Length: 259
Image 1 (tube, rainbow, N blue to C red):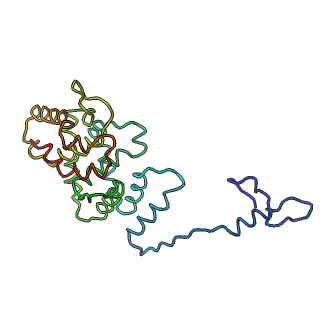
Image 2: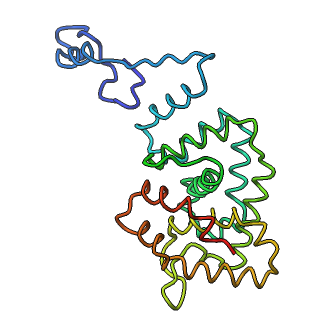
């Protein structure tokens, strides 16, 4: 053996010693381990369905380098539909979206913003099945959205931009923080994002008809009062599973943010 960059101790070793007086053999223990080792082989044909490629890539990327869930999804999106992937990345970098969701440099590196953009699209367009794991739901939503030839990317892009422009104008980087009675404070809350962003997107015609000051006042008031809503408070916060939260809050997001 030579060029053993990852196992330098094996450099110059042979299966069996070249000479009884030279210790350059692997030895019985390593020989047995090699003989008993198994090599996993996955066969993927060019004509295999996209869904098969998607699931194989997910399984293969559960070990090795620690990719985030969204980094794996991004790799799949590129192979499924490069135009969709580029569009999703473009949305995730929209200034009002980045600002209102308080994304840190570390979050941006781990594609947290891309996942939030995907969540927004999924909540609007892909019905959530009660009890489904949240990440499985997002995986499935990505596959459906990227594979669909009927997705109106231009129209959905306009909805995305307008929704976060409205939220950023009214609430800035406090859009998804909790009101403590005196000010918005604390960390970004996913439950608030799910309800407020989804609800705003589904009420855009009514919100657009308001003048800017009226709309800003309305959104601020809604954001302040939302945590006090009984249904919201019962299905959000520590100890509430993501599946429970989505099952109970997504169906009422539109009504909760209705003018």
